[in-house]
Length: 193
Image 1 (cartoon, one colour):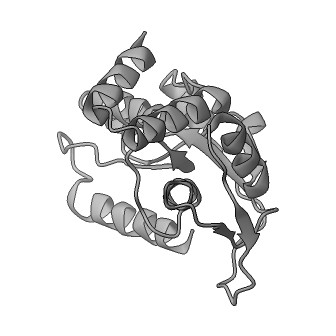
Image 2 (cartoon, rainbow, N blue to C red):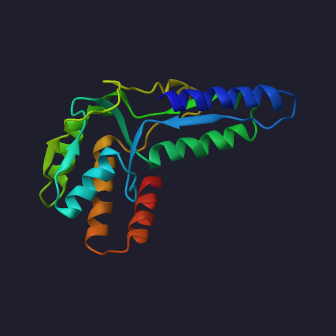
């Protein structure tokens, strides 16, 4: 959260220092909640760690099972970013910070996400609590996307259930040796429908 806040401040300073004149490009910044989706192998991220553990047959180590996060499939905020880029190309008032997050109902605890993925996965997912020590984490995070909804007419196309379905399907395709590029392209096409 601190790094996102710092990026907002740097972007705003850059925008006001170099792009505050008439005809200047609209420099906007955008951020998303906890994104999930196939192909993410980032370390210390719940969903990639979960599938890495499931594929290796090792237990998933969970730091904070009760932490609530605003989960969404990565294609949701990407669609918002594209809509913002279109607007910023013609509207200088788009030069500001924007949030692209899920509906409030799609914020859930870490343990809930693990349980929902385990229901979708056709194999065992062992888990254990990682005793730490861990850096401080906020217990509950949420993004206010009301500006994007009101001014860009943006809303997530997939709810969390669809995002979990698509994410699990991608990792299943990877596990089974299927063409994950084709899986990705099929998911992008389904998102656009």
